[in-house]
Length: 211
Image 1: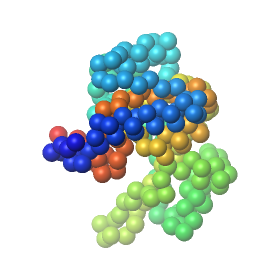
Image 2: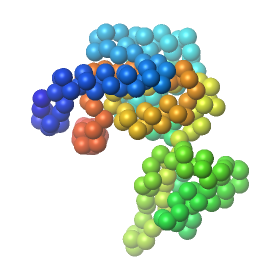
Image 3: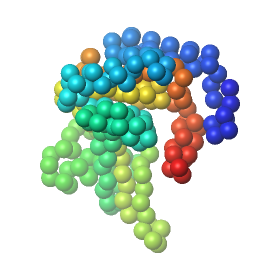
Image 4: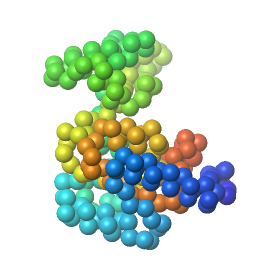
């Protein structure tokens, strides 16, 4: 199966196999999930869940998906999982040591004076990516770096509903499961959604940015 905007997409059979494997992963870890193609009532079920749990957090992989969902469930707390589940820590380059990233983050957090530095192993475990976002001065020298840390989701004690969960990569799914309490997560899956391929997701984000 191919597409002008997203070439070399998975075949229908591969998509179904991938979705089945994802559902198996969620069931093995006792994580709630709802699977169905478009029009089968997933969003209606999500809306009903939010009515029962008004403080619940609803997250999506992309901004466009979040905007669409806000129109359909205006009373819900909706955002991308990058913005709601991850805390982005930006600090001056003076604190950055590329050979000791965890220590750099801890040092930067401690300079805030709020006691959030925490144990090194905790920071390493919650690190979203080892590759930082970098900002540079006009002369090309490094100005600041930004790292993402997963929030302590278990302490939120709120249901977290992940819409378009088929687009979230396996590594991030496993990390979410480990960071949450049993039964706290609920994934909504569509076997015909785009898979979480880096190439496809990069194309999707690039396309959305220019629409």
